[in-house]
Length: 108
Image 1 (cartoon, rainbow, N blue to C red):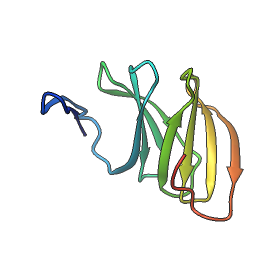
Image 2: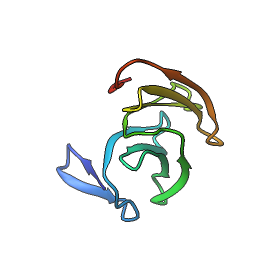
Image 3: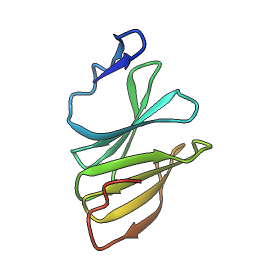
């Protein structure tokens, strides 16, 4: 995965350790962390300064289509092709709540 500075038209960072396909990505409000909705059914939290995966959140049973942070960065929401939205505690990776719908949820 490569991160680009659009204004400078240059790649500023490459997360070499990330080799999987992903569907969604969201920066934390403080800009220090990246959450990835991966096609391996996980949500991954990466430290942007060290380029390391610090947490893998498991619980979805299909691709993760969308990711969003709460404004304070404490909660991470993920939406999946398994017809659920999950709310996660970003600090410890615990699933706080799972809400089911009757169709694929592709945005938050």
